[in-house]
Length: 143
Image (cartoon, rainbow, N blue to C red):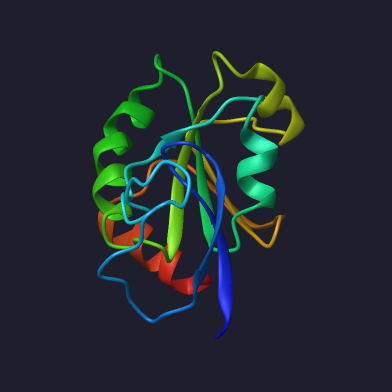
């Protein structure tokens, strides 16, 4: 059976799971919590590279800052859209105020900026707040 590698959103351990069209249950082999939890994960410079390199599913990174109005406006949309893609896409957030190294590494010049990664490489980016319909369409385009 074909497998995919995903990073647990809770303990950040790597898991190999069977590739399926949809999942009703999938738990982390380490912490036993659900891999279907699609709540966006806050990443730092300490865990960013591990998370991106070990996730074979599409990963959408929201580069944001707490003082940014459009970022705050888009945050609930980002969280809600994430619920539509359990084990299809991973939604993560990077606070550029706290993680200036990551903002510089990825040449983030405006926020919010969404950067999409697949197989450990950047495949697309878009700057500016997106509504739910636009974000859903963007994710589906790269699945």
